[in-house]
Length: 250
Image (cartoon, rainbow, N blue to C red):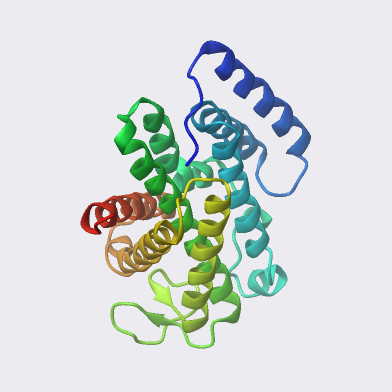
């Protein structure tokens, strides 16, 4: 489990300088909009400042994997009107909708009592595992889902409908949750297979709950945007992970 680095001015200035340089070099990649890159630089600075290079690399891994799966079958999804806007490029609202909860946990962890650092980092991992699960499930389901149904009624609905699920999309969500969990485990945020199981379980449960919110509240309340729902999903994943840590002995 990585120990949060010292929180001094030099550390934060280094985080800012490194992220400024990295964003300047990476902004030509077709992953984010110009303003999206700026906000990604802010997010990267906060994560590097709070958790060091491991925290920064965690969000880079999520961005890379999420962007990769978004581009799978992009032409087909575009032809059917199911592709993400802006050619799959993410904007500031996508950056913070996906990472606001994880960023908040990262900022709290260095100042928390030592006994609570590990659970907070586990919740941090669960939030990103849930978001990658959602991205994998949505992008794979829209392109390769054979039978898409509404999660509340199990009645067939068109792909891309809020609250829609498919067998292929759900399987892809599980792959995304496990993959992100393995990445975070490799970075030291998880302490073993039990932590991985908690992260994957919380991520999958939050993803299914996100579909439920999409099928009910989001269809009724127009102000409940996809970005707000994404933030709610990552918050649910973090809270579920903390609950599982509290409920499961050891």
